[in-house]
Each structure stands twice: as structure tokens, then as C-alpha cells.
Image (cartoon, rainbow, N blue to C red; front, top):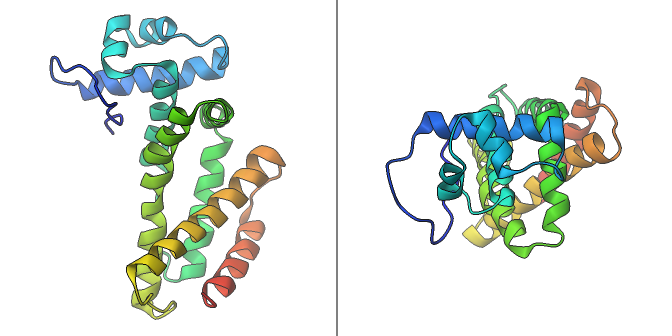
Length: 206
């Protein structure tokens, strides 16, 4: 996964996927070990075995780098299984999402950037484009599967479809993030099943 390009970023030699991967992995490892406050671009560069100037050619700030480190994990690890029904698909993605949030590198990075974004509008925008908007693909895929199975009706217009997609994403992401990171409660099969039953019932009324 290539990091989201920043406006105005300088061009130079072609990007190396291997170097980008090493940098993002080093960022997540440094966050777990050092925490947000002590993390520096220099530390990440040293861990990744690249020059600090290499980082700044790709990311203008620590904020951008950490968001992309989180986004890469979501892109690589979070998928929507096809389990034969809308309820089963929701249960599957909820369990995968919760497991991803339980990983120390995900938990530390996500909590850090969300906290920082309350004071930084540009960072909030980057989180939306790099993480939120990209992960909505799972909602779109799940809804399309359910519609093809006849489990959900098709929306009459694109505007309604878009609003429904946003609502579904907010409900799933909000519930799992709150339970896992705020309430610090487990997300197990039984909770995922009950949540999916509730969500599917609500979706059929939209």
C-alpha cells in the first residue's frame, strides 16, 4: 500500500515499496515502544534504515506518517469475508476489526492520531481520506452482496445510497471502536452476533 500523497510533495527518485513498508512498520514499532510524545522522525528513520530526508520527501510531518502507518494496517488486515449472509458477513468483519484494534501498534497509533486530530483540522481531513473513506469500501461491498442475495433493497438514488453507506459505516466503526478502545470490553462471537442481528434489523427499515 502506497501512502497517501500530500499536496505539494516534492518529486524525486521513484518510490520504493520496500522502503515505504519498512518505514511504516518502523513507525508502528516506535509508537508502541516510545508513545506518541517521544516518537520522532529521526527515530523512525534509524529503525527503518533510511535517511531522515527520505522520510520528509514522503511525509511532511509525524502526523502524516502515523496516519499512513495506521491506514496501511487497515488496508492489509481488514477484509470482508463472504460467509453467505449479511448477518454472517457483519459478524465476520466486526470480529476482524476488533482483533485489529486489539493489536498494540493499531491501538496506540489510532488513539494518538485521533487525539491529535481534535486540535488539527488538516490531520482530521487526512484521517478521513486515508482511513475512513477507504474502509467504506467494505460497507459498499457488503451491501452489494446483500442486495444481490435479495436481503436488502436497492436504494432509489445515489444520494440515498451514499447516506446509507455513511450511516452503516459510522454505526459499525463507532460501536466497535467504543467497545474496544473506550470501554475496554471484549468483542467476542456472542457480542458480534447480537450486534449483527440488531444492525440487520435496522438496515431492513431504511
